[in-house]
Image (tube, rainbow, N blue to C red; front, side, top):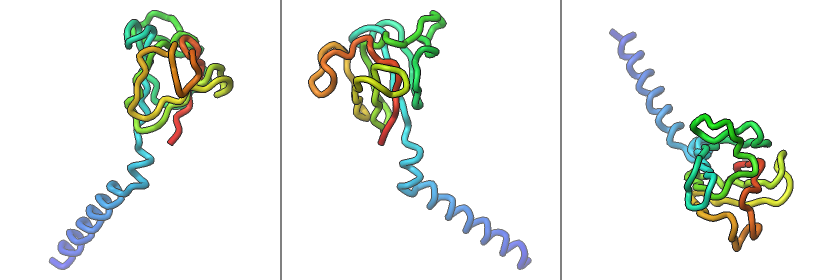
Length: 131
């Protein structure tokens, strides 16, 4: 009988400690989603693609739907629904002019920008997510 009670208490302690770890701010920060949807045309139209991690070169990223066309230098609008800022770069390997897309932001026309390069339409070649 004592053995069963000890096992039940041990399981309860493990369960509580697991809940505490899952709710900790450090763990929540590590799980912040990266979610950048990019579109071929202005106003979120045309083909789309989803990016969820750092990518040093878009040359092998393709529009959804199996068209075989690369997103490289073909992005005209985006929606960043993630908790991290997405920095898109004009060149591969995170170089060249940079466009900073704040967390939970969008831009329906990358041609006209006030806080980023004035024209980033059809320019992006890589992306890095930052906190």
